[in-house]
Image (cartoon, rainbow, N blue to C red):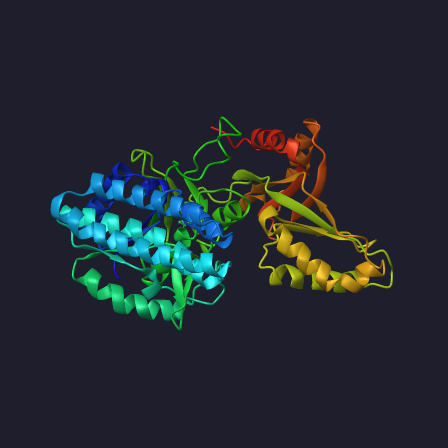
Length: 469
Ligand code: ASP
Ligand code: MG
């Protein structure tokens, strides 16, 4: 569709009746200018509350389930009261009730079963977005705009990896064109739920936590949007986390690859998979602050105006674990061990944040998120049970006292001396470097240090590379 704008509002931008009103104003003025499609997250904290409810249910805690259901009901009921009046409220509250009833039925099923089938979890936790989209659409209609809420289950077709599904773009395009194009041509404003989808045969899925950004980019891509605006509560993508680095600055422009690397390495502004569907079509993305409309935001583009500038930003992560595998015997092929470990990681659906190896003793280590550690260790121990039992492999070593620092920038490629400067800056803080990873694209240098050194190292690198305001 020509000149189509896709906009996504995150949880904080949908967090209260007041915030929803502001988001709706942004929607209304965009819709006046050009065809617009909106994607929304659940009100902030709601997805956590839904997951918590299911945890209580799985644990047989009926009282806890009731308590959570009451809180969810109260939160949305209050918002509905504050946001809508009279007729609109009377028409909308029953829809919210019905959605929450559906959730309550699933929660009670889990309570009875004592387990949480992944597919039911996905159906249940998409409820947050269904509630928030219903609320903002009703408010917009009250403002005279022909807005309607749409469950992305009807639209976004995915594989069957529940909890972390990937889109099937061709099938999604077909549905999106059928469902959305006529509405857009008629001047209507679709408000689509972020985060969820369904398999080809209709089983509900979700795209992973924080997945509404990804939903928006999937829709922008299949609808050939001319821009995607992602509204959150920060001014854009920054050169570092401002809580760690006081003079961190908002970046005016950044490339897709840089933004993706930053997201994968811990920057919270974007879901890491957001940019992939947009790259081929070169659809520009803006990261904007719905709490500060004056701020221009960050533009994410194929190539920046100022060209590749060297390092652009530094991020860090501390919820990570370094897992090392060390063959005790020369009989084992290090390459085979590595291949099998990667299989085990894939089977656990874990993401490798960094991987390094040394050829002499064939030992290697990889960095993963702590949340993924239990599944990874379980798989590794099962796959290597014989080698471990016979002592061909040393016991698997897990180091939790580590953090990752990532320095990202397209312009780092082919700059001799840069890595040296970065390492020197870190060592000057008396922070010891445990492992280093740099891909051949030279887009990111990943450095693993002790947890307590992370903040100092981030500040030192930010200053050394002159990234601040
Ligand atoms: N509501 C979902 C979550 O909290 C998706 C999102 O907000 O992007 O993970
Ligand atoms: Mg988000």
